[in-house]
Length: 241
Image (cartoon, rainbow, N blue to C red):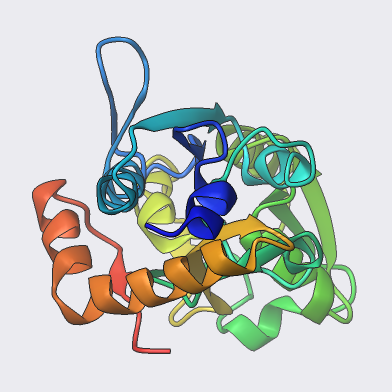
């Protein structure tokens, strides 16, 4: 490994991997000491193995908190959804997996399609600073986003405040809809969250390595193998860049 590469990705001698612990698809379990288990953790471990250094996981309770630390030398790589707002401080690879985001609506709702949701007076519960919150913030023209701190809180907000829709990742909404008699998940999605690997801006050698690693991990079948290993439903291998 070149010294420039190691200086970018393992300046402390260890690859510090920022992990969004709230993503139940990419962090599908915990180790005995509370660390992450799942596709994201294994991707980080594989990168560290190829660099010839150990990996240390730096957990965050939300992707927004992870992104906030991009300039503070807390982590070397961050495994979160790629979004333009985050790309101001992070360099992102292409996605390695995609997750469809859509809406859940309550019993008796007149909303039938994705397009129906973006209408005046419609209130949408959403997990604050999630990738799909950032997407909706950019694209909604009429509906109002009502934010809560985390997935469970956004569900509670939707139910308790009788909101018109709950935005979320389809796999999570599939479990949520079972708790609400008469509720429906709308067909299709408003976006597919692009789960990628980022590194703080300015680490060019490190970014080039990560970019090539992600493409090889997809084409070789590694990403598909990790999805199968952890028995995750709702993740799709992203297409080539």
